[in-house]
Amino acid sequence: MTKLTLSSFVNNRKLLLEQKLTEYVRQLEVPTQLQEAMIYSLEAGGKRLRPMLLFATVEGFGQDFKESMPVACAIEMIHTYSLIHDDLPAMDNDDLRRGKPTNHKVFGEATAILAGDALLTYAFQVIATMSETFVDSSQKLRLIVELTKAAGPEGMVGGQAADMEGENKQLTLTELEYIHHHKTGDLLSYSIISGAILAKASDKDVENLRGFAKHLGLAFQIKDDILDIEGSEESLGKPVGSDMNNEKSTYPKLLGIEGAKNKLDDHIIKSKEYLYNVDIDKEKLELLVDYIMYRDR
Amino acid sequence: MTKLTLSSFVNNRKLLLEQKLTEYVRQLEVPTQLQEAMIYSLEAGGKRLRPMLLFATVEGFGQDFKESMPVACAIEMIHTYSLIHDDLPAMDNDDLRRGKPTNHKVFGEATAILAGDALLTYAFQVIATMSETFVDSSQKLRLIVELTKAAGPEGMVGGQAADMEGENKQLTLTELEYIHHHKTGDLLSYSIISGAILAKASDKDVENLRGFAKHLGLAFQIKDDILDIEGSEESLGKPVGSDMNNEKSTYPKLLGIEGAKNKLDDHIIKSKEYLYNVDIDKEKLELLVDYIMYRDR
Image 1 (cartoon, rainbow over the protein chains, first blue to last red):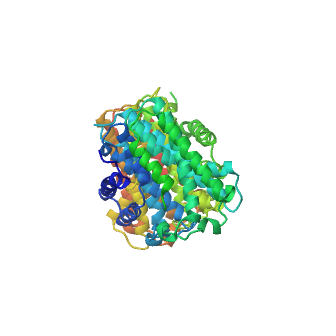
Image 2: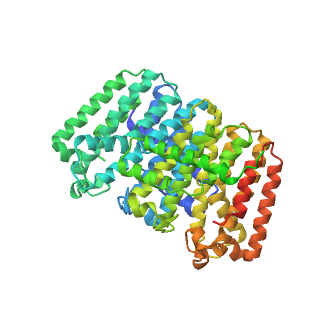
Image 3: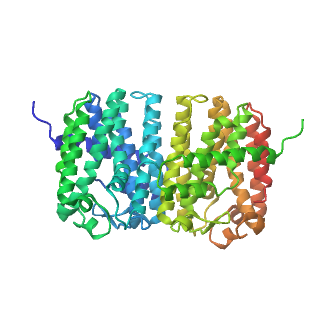
């Protein structure tokens, strides 16, 4: 059997995901501007790492990834809403995202705020109205509860709030980990935990996957910080050193570049230790772990 | 038996609701600023009309209103988030709400945006994690599905987007009804429908309550427009004629003040016709209908 490559895993799944994302929003009967603003940011691309983690998890448990498509789309809607709101002038005030003008630059701030609100709410609708062919009511409720925790005040929104409060001051490593754990880690973890819920994994497997996901999320963020220093502007699509130039706290700033790389290694090793204990075909998840560790953007 | 009055119905229920609302947010482990911003707007008061409609509905079906408290709090969280986002400079740019500085005036725009996002997400968490003593999984899922529709792109957010798009142009009556039906009507309707779901009302009763709620919601909005012209600044807590002075489309502008009053009567009569067909004790709901029709603020 030939070895699976990352691109052969990602390509076809990414295409189907992106078709379905647009389709979900196209089928809504809503004011045109709002609809276009929602679609604009959903189509702005990106790595689609979260849906890929979900697909790799359900497939690891032997399920068809297509059965988890509504959850994958909901996750990407939540991720996209958070980017739209984070880019607003009152927040990070970014004009560009992945080389394209940000949502409020194209549609205005009012529509950008509403497009974010709409995507957040619609994400829950997409999960709550999933066909019950592959999931039952109690699975859907668990998916919703976990998503509110990952995306809400004790999750992503709390992480973003802590990030804003911590701007322009030197954070401790504990404070920095709190921010990343919640701001990016919780939704990344949800991508894996939701796969386990869909696959009706045992409680023990769910808890080990939680440990796996937590360390993977921190590794992802540390790699981001390292790339901001060592990456090339061409592959990143944004100026190198942009974190260094503003007063943002990063792992390399707190630990030095070598310290940050050691921390990255630690988290990758710990994540693999947790994964090792899960009764799952690990091939696809390991591909994504390697991608997170070795990516150049 | 002495006749029930509006104040004796509202007072004790409103107090308990407000205690519970604060308690829900106090128990969160989140950054201080975010928590204070959430609580500030939740405590800013208001009529709490939506929770009262929910309580009147479940009590009409013979249930204790306390059993529906989590849903009442979730509705008030969604209503509050929509006010915080609507008041933002990019939207209506309001400095005052019910005589108090708006959220972004106190906490800054970034925190106001995040407090709104947090309340929206937390509302779903509150429903999804309700104790299953009084509701089962399938009722909770129905409550969530209906709430996503009422609050999301095809509901409240869509209404607000249409309202923004329609600013500074003369709308037709159909366009104006679309805006109000969604911007305020859908969440008002949900307050009644969610009560019917909690009480396990029959499909026929749910559909009649939907008709009741739809006309009641439009009546509520028309009354608002009439009060903007005929109310006193003192009781309204905002300048009289503020809708007339900006280019906002209103019922009195489209239909004349007498035409608007006739329209209000029509919707109240139609709402009562629907209610008449529901197998429910109507006393408390009728108190609220009268309040909506005869209120002076």
